[in-house]
Image (cartoon, rainbow, N blue to C red; front, top):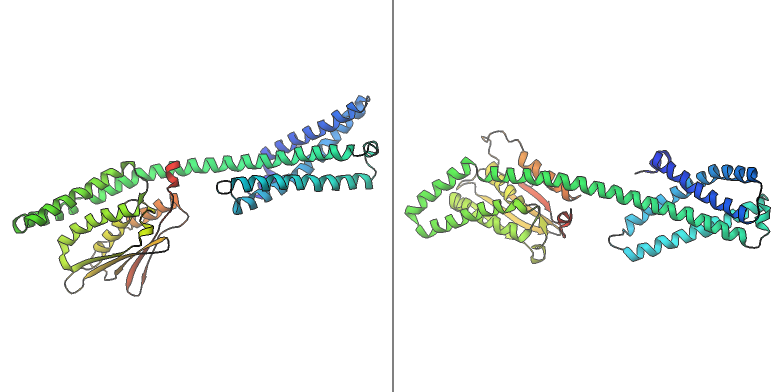
Length: 356
């Protein structure tokens, strides 16, 4: 919603006309109560008052919209309910007083409605009532329209999030339960069984933890960082068995961010891409570092890109960006810096997506 919509939108003009009719009707009733009997004159005044009050309502509406937008930025209802309520009521009263005094001055200066001005403060009281009704109606209407728009946006966002959730689960299962992953894992397990039964037992447990975590995502839209890190440890254990000392991962995560939230399988996807796209050998070891800076997780690895790798579509990274786009204004970043590939993943404090 922009200022142009307030002036051109038919819904707003219908409401302006409705407000003007109410205010003009109050004036008509006041004239009748004061003894007006000439029906033609009363009707003429009523009809003439409507376009005047319609234009005046447009001015008040534009002011109300600008004020509400400003208040929403600094004191939104969600975080400053009572302060916002007091401020908005105070602003309405101030506008009413200013318009009442201004209207009284103009009417007196141009000698309009002289009969009303002779009645002590009768005109001021009447004007104050009319301006209060008009101003209050415009503020209420704008608040209703903005809340309605926000609700529609949240419903749209919730629908997109739900669809993305199904796609995410599909992609997660497809990425995890794929022939290459199973083939490599089973090959490692078959060799471990004859070499180290203790380690093979650990491998089977970690292997089952990986699949259990993926299946548990059926009811999850976001997960705590600590839960994602625990899953990553299980996944990395399987990769570590496969690559041995040629693959390393170091974590330096502050305790206070462990209860923050990120999309599920985010860390696993970034680590998996690092393993998939880089050379890993005794000569070129791959070292992955995970740390946090403020409200971001930083995943960094030495950049030793595999030239013989099949063409990458970048679907995984694109899906990760889209998942973030649905629940946050902050998006992940990916870039190469100082011969290291860096992924910056924003973390969120409160799981507001569960309220959709």
